[in-house]
Length: 128
Figure 1 (cartoon, rainbow, N blue to C red):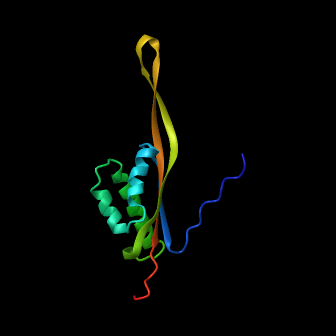
Figure 2: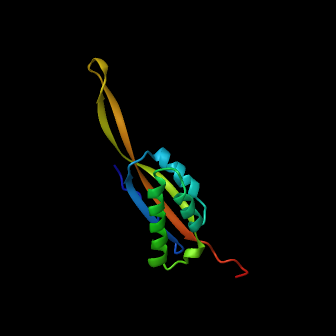
């Protein structure tokens, strides 16, 4: 059994948002999360706004929450934020059954995912 691992401690220039039990597979969600990693916060929001993927709406909400956390809870400059980390984890899997021929059943799995977005403030350039 053992102890639960300690949560990651955020630096002073970071803010985090987490969404649990998103009704999509981790593989599909990771495609969207991958597309915003390393981007500036406003560019990432634009990319998610115009993405054709259904789950991009949920990812956009989580990113907006992380930006709001950075601004209100950590007093970070919104204009200098970028997506430092965006990672996906597995959550529960609902199992359902579908009747098939000759009295058999087909198993249907409906996966859920967790999403964590961490935004970080870029250090000021020497010229500023």
